Length: 261
Image (cartoon, rainbow, N blue to C red; front, side, top):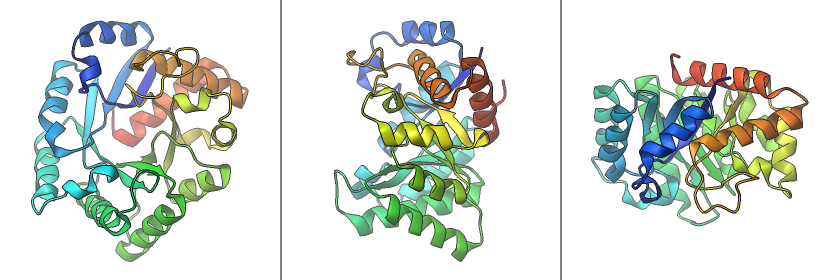
């Protein structure tokens, strides 16, 4: 059985002391590829180092919406330059909108659209963060695609929306990725969304070190090996086997991010 964790943050301090041991555990759990996401340009060097240390790790470059205020006149060029120069870059992001913790709507939208343009120029998929912003995000993505006549490729990562919202983004061509939140007892809307996502749009992730899934929820640190618990829950919700979900989500991740096994 093979799994791909499509969203990790292994450069965070939580992993500095024992990353090699963490790797051994994800290998034992059948995790064969990982996509390392990016929060801000200051991370570029550390993420790139990890990606070249471990052959199974690819990575994204971008600016998180909660860090939109850090966008400078040369930020776009920094993203472009690294994405062009390193073949291990397989996506732009994470980008998006977050109105749960911030209200700088115009700035977030500007930074999002700038990164959509970069992804379009490079023909790379986007990794989208969306929290309390589904309506606004849907409108921006739809309008951007219509205005540019460019079909975006990408994933709604750590998805927490309702089935209706899930359908919105599938209609726009996006994959939907579920994290440890799908295992939480009261996450009824997320679980309902996991049941209705089309098989060829389904992905799994940990978003580690955050959101450890049940039965590891009490642990302070999530890690890639735990993506198996996410896949198990998705399989149970959909009435499928773990092997079927593993095969499908691995195939989907390879297709979206251009990964080879």
